[in-house]
Length: 59
Image (tube, rainbow, N blue to C red; front, side, top):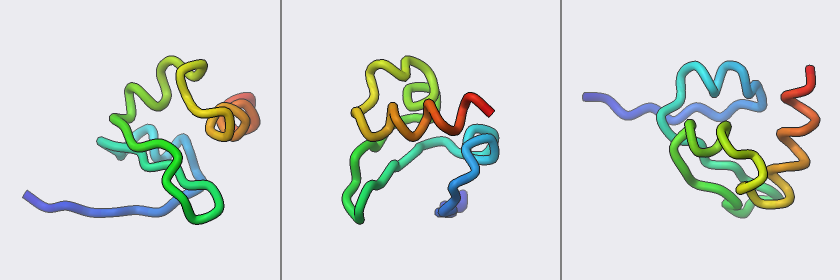
């Protein structure tokens, strides 16, 4: 197999291609989980991830 790391702000792309999502804020890892978990129950995410997802997912 092959491991690839991709850095993106495009959540639609990340949702399609990622197995895991690592969400960072100010250089610190805030979330590290499977994509289904990250994009699933948004209320379970950190406050910063909730804010980011609220802005991104409404478009």
